[in-house]
Amino acid sequence: MYTLLIKQFFRSKTVFLVLGISIFLGTLSIGTGKQFLNQKQIAIEKTIEQQEKHLITQVDLHKDDIGLLLYYLKFSFINSLKPIAGLAIGQSDVNSHIQNVSILNLEGQKYDTDLVNPMRLQVGNLDFSFLMICLFPLIVIALNFNLLSEEEEKGTWKMVRIQERSLFKYLLLKLSIRFLFVSLILIFLILASKVFLRISVDLDFWYITIISFTYIIFWFLVSFFVVLLRKSSNTNAIVLLTLWLVLVVLLPVMTNNYITNKYPVKEAFTMIIKQRDGYHKKWDTDKRATMEKFYNHYPQFKKYGVKENGFSWLWYYAMQQMGDDESILERGLLNDKIKKREDLGKSIARFFPPLQVQLTMNSIAKTSLADQMNFLKATSSFHERLRLDFYPKVFDNVKVSDVDWKSYKPEYFNNAQRENVFNSILPILFIMLILSGACIFIGVQKI
Image (cartoon, rainbow, N blue to C red; front, side, top):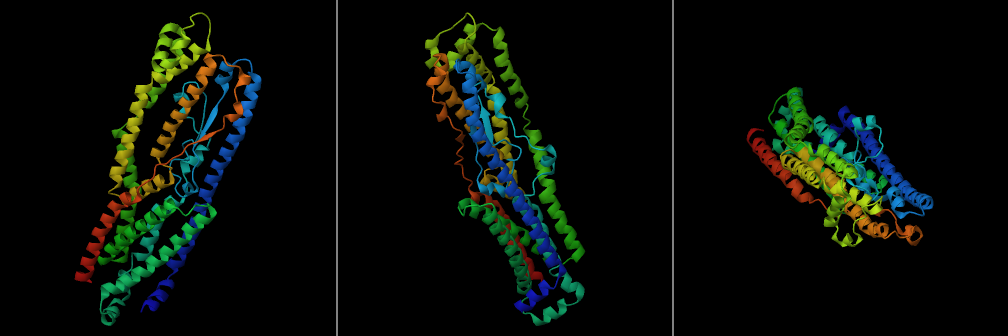
């Protein structure tokens, strides 16, 4: 019987159409991921090369004044994405993964982004996660919407009722063939991604695989539940496509609008204004007041005192520091709002598998908003280390030639945070358990 069902399955033109579309779009998604990773790697290589040239050039131009030299010098802090990021690009295409910062005020430098064609960003990326979340449910629907209704509409269901002892088991056999077919496509794409994107077979790779199969099983259960209601093929198709539209398209848009309106980030504009005013207004402020605030922040530098006459780099960098210090409240509020947005999004996503899978994949690939905020936070720490390293050299007017500039290499962000995928899929598993129970109940009672 199983062999006959397999032959019947592969006689359908839909099967080969699904196979062709899946392989074609899957290849495009892998190509998109490869192109994305190549662009990031090229940018990193150019950054390393450019910083070395930049240091040599600026040191040669300003070898008599270390304060002026450090006004121009920029140092690179790199968020080197793992190859698995090619599967779930997330927000990393709009957020910069390289920070080039000087020891001037930081907030005006942190939010510089890469130069990317805005039309490309508007269209978006056909990466593996998009394929997984949007296309695979349609494949499942196309293969299953007429699982039972086709037999009834062609008149073959009466023959099946006579020959089969368990009609529910018969439907499960048909469903299993379709599940194996989709699973083979998914496995092929995952293995192809592993090879072409050079993804390591580590925990993150298995997490992506687990969440992908969990999501596929969810849509098979949804389709099977609708099929067991014994409506016509047209009705099944309309119901399933409506569910897809609501879960995959409408709910994410509505959720995003709700979160945006609930937590508007007005502090972003205010922070920039405060940061700029905190620096620019110091030109017209008494130097002693500026230095007192600076020494309150860095008491270890009090020994340098206040030079009230003429220009000094001590006072100038103290002004720059005030730009960051006087916008610290707004910066904290901004980060708090973004954290609340992230937490609310995760809370809502627990009830909607497509949202949950998207957020989980981004977290596993380290391309989520939370990962970008962690990178910016680490950038602040990197910037602070630079200041504490160079401030004494500037204030003591150390000779440029006495500093080992070759030792200043680009630093890398180590994102040690790991997503607990099992906590993420627990809500989906609970929904699947309910669907499984409903399918068994309907199948046993009504089929």
